[in-house]
Image (cartoon, rainbow, N blue to C red; front, top):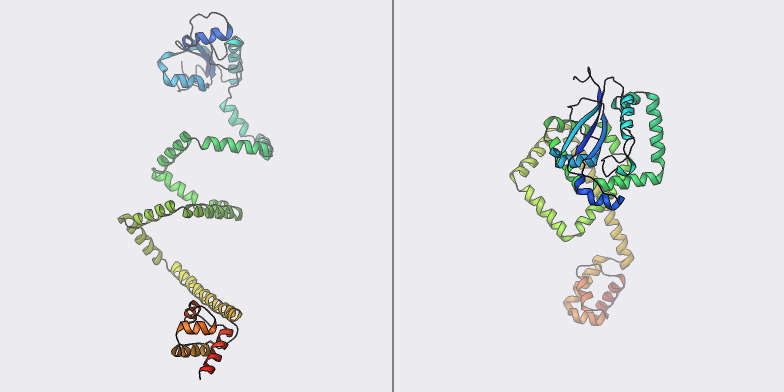
Length: 353
């Protein structure tokens, strides 16, 4: 029989010859009745070719088939001779209705008696209709506008994505994709496109990224072990031939671009100007702070009198005469002298003279 000419789909039965033998005791305990040896069955339908690789839609049965495919046998109980998926589901439903309720999940892999296999062609046809698209988008927007549903879905997706097997599978898939030069070039082009940049770096995302980066850097550098590990890794990478070559190539490439060099020079001039203004402001503030701390006095004259008085007596004697500590006398050699102490030194000189 040829698919698309002699048939368009079929209803099938899978049966596992060994599955229920292991379940006999459990079946007897749950239903209090003896059970004969028989295979576990699965009834389903498929709108497609017999040899297209389709197994079934039951995750439970597919897991068993993956472990021991030689235990499973398949039988076609109905051939769909017309391209009508609705009729095929109706036939499947008639067969499912023959299953007894207590046999679901025990003698059968089927967990329900409802034939709800969607038709791919029907789905594509529905989504090609603009009215259907608009209705579905409104429905999805309404669902996601619910804060409880949004939080529940986010938590579920986060839990799924954080599973070790999921993380490892994503890493392997990404690595395999990036090994393909064409896929890698496409990914880089999309990542650096103007649309992606504008979408990624909105003001809100910039603020979030800044806060996240600040937090990560603070946590990393507050730990001595992490900080030392980072420094050692940077030194190790920089000292390799690859690292030296990378920095050398990037440096030469940057200096070959005249526009970037000109922009860098302009930025440097602006930074130097700002730096001079900043240091000038610091000097002014220091002067104001000095006047506030030490009072207005001629520091040059005060230093001259201080050095003169040290030629006449020792630091210890001067400290005793001025009623200050020897440490204070040592500080005056490198720091401004307050107006009060300058007056005391001046009076002391007049007494000595």
